[in-house]
Length: 184
Image (cartoon, rainbow, N blue to C red; front, side):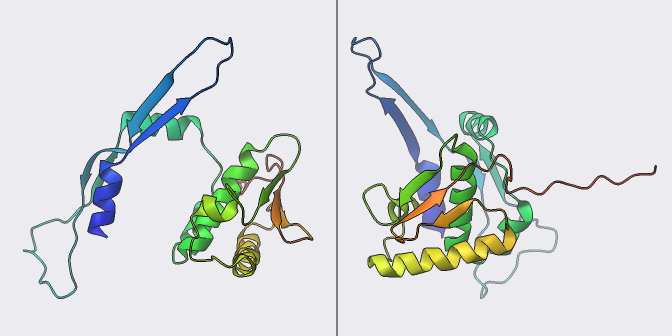
């Protein structure tokens, strides 16, 4: 886990484009990192705890550029759904992908192949499901779990079972409307 945090902290993301709108060569590149600072405590269950006065508070400071990117591209994720799926990382990843995909789809539904280059298996990084039929079964199971938390989830598996169809969710976002309480 420690090495995983170190890799994420050291990661720099590069973006670029080769689009040439006016047939003039252009290079448009950007990069940013996720965090400015991380202060994380790790302990083994076998290790004794520190002195009673010592506090073990974790702190993660996002970089300004990463924070702005997140803030400018918010998606309506339900906090209770994330908490409910916290113990199942695959389903949580799938839920987050569905919320993002359905929120960003405009107009016609998006059809995403389950197992293909740039398909859902690659987008979720599920290399462990090398057999397409196993991945299809896993997605069907995960979709059932997501719909238990988000009944209006606008995703279905196509009858051919080769792709998932995701419709726009602006009319039924993943976040629940909060009831307002107050005196009348």
